[in-house]
Image 1: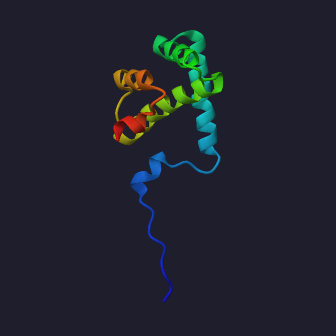
Image 2 (image 1 turned 120 degrees about the vertical axis):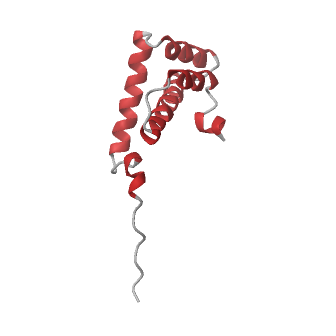
Length: 105
């Protein structure tokens, strides 16, 4: 008897991206962070960037860490069908370099 593949859970489809699209989303989020730093809007992003640099992180790593905080918030927006939570985002920025999912554990 031939084994069937399990059916895909369509409830997870909103967070799954076709190959290559995840890379584009990541770059879009990194560019968003760079733009926020340059414009100092919101100011918490630029302040977090300066703090991470002062703590010894290089430019690329500081951008990546802030991008993780933004990506975590975007993930929750999509999965919980809710609006952007500025308070939670800022709390995640303050905790960096601890990653958002590490503090949720």
